[in-house]
Image (cartoon, rainbow, N blue to C red):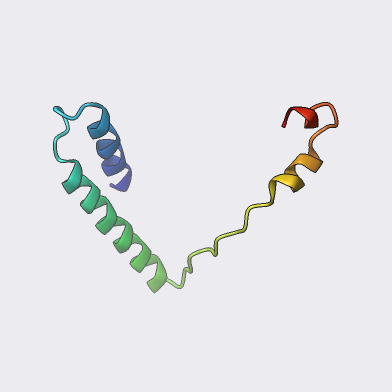
Length: 71
């Protein structure tokens, strides 16, 4: 259901006249997400902790020497 609401909200930005209920769909999407999270938490599931992104310098070191000058 949440995927359908995502699609409706996305389409509402592009075809506003055909999909006028963006705010309603967005609020329903948030409610749906909260209900899914609550259900999963009741089953013992825990949200994964956010991982830190590696720094750009670390990523540069992974690139070949030929590509580095262009960054």
